[in-house]
Image 1 (cartoon, rainbow, N blue to C red):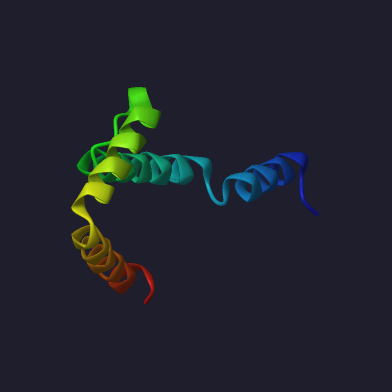
Image 2 (spheres, one colour; image 1 turned 45 degrees about the horizontal axis):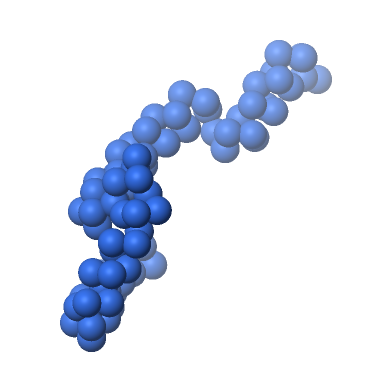
Length: 83
C-alpha cells in the first residue's frame, strides 16, 4: 500500500517525466544548447521577430546555396538523431 507522500512523489515524477532535479538539469542543458544553436543562426532573444525576418531574408538572398546548406545540416543532424 502506498503512503500519501509516495503517491505525491509519483505524481510529481509523472508530471516532470522523472525526478524533478534531473529534469531541471536536463532542461538547463537543453536550453543552453538551443541558445547556442539560435545564436549561430543569428537570432536575438530580445527581438525574435526581427531576427527571424533577417534569417529569412539571408536565406532568400543565398538562393539555392541555402537549400544545399540546409540539406547538409539536416542530414548531419539526422545522423545523430535518427539512430
